[in-house]
Picture 1 (cartoon, one colour):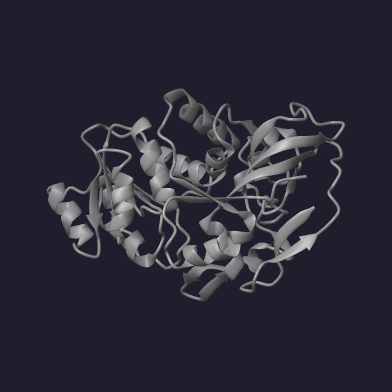
Picture 2 (cartoon, helix red, strand yellow):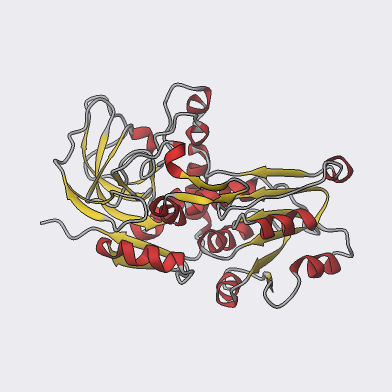
Length: 355
């Protein structure tokens, strides 16, 4: 098995060879078909998630151990299964739900292992998809993709699921209410593709890159604000007659974007912070009772939500994502371009053809 591994934080990834694992118990071995390059991979490579008032938040302090094969947005073909694996047959093409937990706690039993206190997430705490094979602990983490191409389907495991779950936390919204989405990068574009199928509320995208805002507009009749050119808070309050907006989803998560979200919330509004850019948010305590407001986080999504997302995508025949496919050898270049903000849409890598 050939894998592209992170050996030292911040240092170049290295190719490593290891015996291809044989699945035991309920495990399933997949041959990798496509793996999405996610912004979380950049944080893992760098070794930290943004900063707070005490400095950088290091991933090693969250339990990440090296060497590690990154890549958690995975579609693969089943090549072998352990004797206790159920629902996985050789040749099946499946999307992997990577947010795996201990399997015993109440979150895991409720099919919400992303909330587990002892995570074993693929590509983060366990070996992931920048490899020609990936070992999945249990067949229940494999999700059918129907006729979706693997290069499109893989991004639903993280970017799609994260956007879907965050948007759901703002619902229900009435048609005369406003939803603001901050950030039109990979997560924002996924949200642009999904939001019209989830709510009839008016939607405004805010970003500092007009190219990304233009890409978002291709998915719907959205208002957009380039926050480099206008004061987004002032403009949103002007549009709503100073009432504010019903909900904000912040896919950036910086001090500035979180303050924007909090500053434009209407009474009974909800701010969902998703992004891991890093920063702080100072909110006066009277804001919460006087606005009856909710500020909450959202981290990926549950296994049930991933199934619901794939069902929605298949049933509603949503327009395809802008996906660019690359050889797996290009992961280091793609991570560098992501660091520089030059990746538009979704980047997906595939291993070399098997002989």
